Amino acid sequence: MDMLPPVTPTVVGLRPSATLAINETCRQLIADGHTVYKLGLGQSPFPVPDHVVKALQDNAHQKAYLSARGLPELCDAVAAHLGRTEGVSRRGEMVLIGPGTKELLFLLQFVYQAELLLPSPGWVSYEPQAAVVGRSYSWLNSDREDWGLCPQALDAHCRSQGARARLLILNYPNNPSGHCYSADELQALAEVCRRHQIVVLSDEIYSGVHFRGEHVSMARYYPEGTIVSNGLSKWAGAGGWRLGWFSFPDELAALHRAMETLITETFTSVNSPVQYAAISALDNHADMAVYLRDSRRVLRALAGHCAEQLRHAGAELADAEGGFYLFPRFHGLKEIEDSAQLCRRLLNEAGVAILPGTDFGRPGGEFSARVAFVDFDGAQALKAAAAVADIDAAFLKQYCEPTVTAMGRLADWLHQTS
Image 1 (cartoon, helix red, strand yellow):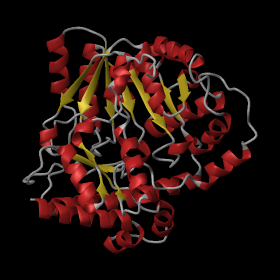
Image 2: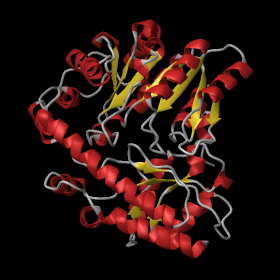
Image 3: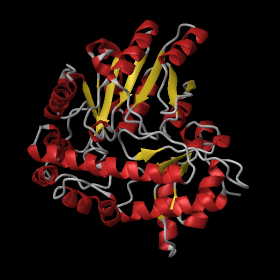
């Protein structure tokens, strides 16, 4: 009999991340000869900008261990970028650089003993991380069509549970719905957070792909209680580079210090060449402005096309305002018990991979799902977008063909299943 080492109970029952699992499933199906349209993993289709790649090449020789909190010049660049784009004043000394924001979120939950508040739907890793660390969490459901968190719902939850430490994760442009908050909505949420002394992690990883370039940070209205999270993966196309950051206000210095100490005992520091290269993504380079402009144009047009196709097939959904995702709800489906079965059948019968709403904190009987509309060659799409004034259906069919075809197959399947 083989002897198995004891494993922490919370990890024994933990499933792999849904987004990574669907990507591996798609890879295996493709390797086995199947045609699969990958609308499950939300990876940027666009290449890393040339000037950022050049900076990485120029710094490939960098090999020294860097400060646990990050390369000082990069920390200063993060603070300057937040000031320039959001009008939020932060010091470079209050920035932490991590191997992606996922690891930083895990460390934050480890050092801060607080109830985690999660607007539903929300990203797939928020809840599992809380469970691993042993933190309590509460999903805050919204009855709004756009899935936005209502200040009244947040206030009611806090009043009903009494005074305690709380950490609210406010992610927008939202994964999975594409919802963005207006300045007025953020001000109203800020009033509630200040009243109940809630620490906010404003997960702004998709800020650069707000379709109109009009992202507004929660830190403008609740600066003393907001940690801003961002990184290179979504708006700079560098997911595999694994670099993200947290920016803290001086009022939360104790959390900053605790996380920095934990960094010294875990990942030590992020790899040096990528940290040096990341500065060039934040320095207001003219090429980055063009890159972001055309990325947003392509994503906005494609999101609108996909939403229209889904509505024609009977789905209910709000328009996305940024990011890579739509979050439709389906009705009238025959012989389907929950959203997980819906997605399994869609993959098996139509070759289209999406993720069920249950992975994002929704009940299975709701028949909701996340559609990541980013299965296309982003390099070709960017080059073509720079040469045209309008991105129309013909453009999308030519340069975003896998996603356009996938949406047609999804719509046909829905008609057959209804």
